Image 1 (cartoon, rainbow, N blue to C red):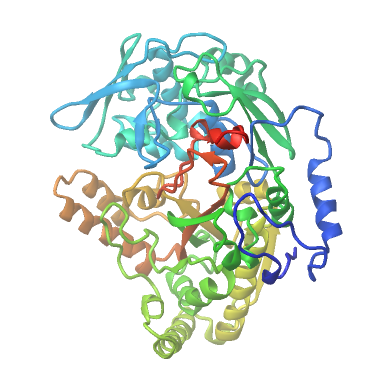
Image 2 (tube, rainbow, N blue to C red):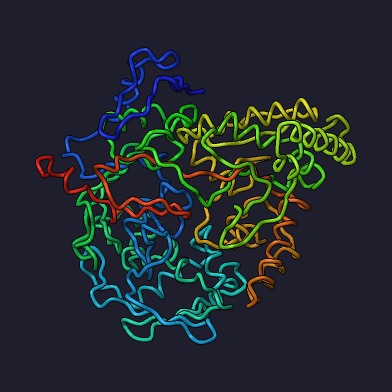
Length: 580
């Protein structure tokens, strides 16, 4: 288990006067920190320093915007590929991208997008409407195996194609009217559809290159990119370098010519690279040492903010004994979420009993399993609520055939161990779960740490018993969370299928009255987090990143945690120290 310095070794200070870790840190000697940094930088070529260096967390799995799932992958791919819209760095909502503007029909079901006449790939080839039609058909095709194909369920024909019920890709509701005009027909009015068009899976990709190189197309050189940057180099487990795409329609607004995305799993190394100025932007929360979180958030260069994201556990409901909701509920009832946020995460996270964070687009989620303990106003009331929850959990487990845990098979709890700060965070949460389940239910849990790629692969193949999970909302509506658990969603990854749940979400999608719509979504979420419990919410995240606001601008706090790289630029005074 990695260790990090004691909290008292970091003090609040002005940006630009960042203290490096002192030599005597107790748990992690400074020499070891230096060695870790050296290891991280080993193998770097003598290239000049990039204008902006970002620590991006774990090594990415792919640059393909249609199949990626991890946030580190999305941050790099999002700089290389663009869609009809892109994310506004201030609000995290959609703004014009390769489409300069669009109209919506009176019934809200047809969007007409107008492409920029100067839209082009980084190789100079123009981007036309046909490129979008081909790209979207590729993304929804089951042969592409895109976990996010559920975003196309909003488009006519999308669900049938993504689930294999139809194989005629021409049935997808996107048409090229002329080289610069695209129409999209939706199943229902979807006010947040422009936000969806900014998602990676709806980006335009280079048809000719993909047809030539197939699944190795992101290794092609040159790689035709549709976004504000083009790929220079990708050295696995080291760094990815990108540079300004001179053919991008908005190249003049790109803030930095060259950007490096560093990969690394060590929170200590990442923090020291930041403190010594070797990196400029520490964006991935999992490489921020959790044990220092409550101290770091008090520094002016560490920025904490409300974040549309939830940490939860997934059960593999296709395996016994987790196919029994009583077992899943029993486990859920003994977990002390408040203890996890106060003693492990420690950055202001909120204990959660629902998947959807409160207030998402005006929606209030239902009270889920164990809500009484989550909502308890003081320690005494919380203790009482937890005692009652534990008693109910023991009753349910006995009813399921395992009184006192007798006869319950040992099982594993899987988490990604290579996720930097997540390595410690996920392990500490695993130990907490292990202790609670042994003490209160008599269950034996083996912790199974795996590296990131294995974690993603095993979760997708349902090769686990219980696994840690999280979800970051892509747009500000509860469906960004709830759609993940539709029976046919590639992001479900629990094996849980519920016709009532699917029907409620379908009914909500066709409902024009917002209150009735939210009522149906709330009823569906109740199935998810109280009655069936294929997942167990633990807490709602806070966002946290580090950069010096006296040197950099263009980075904004927003609910969906979108920080497009093109908008980041060095402040003029910082770029020219002699400036007044």
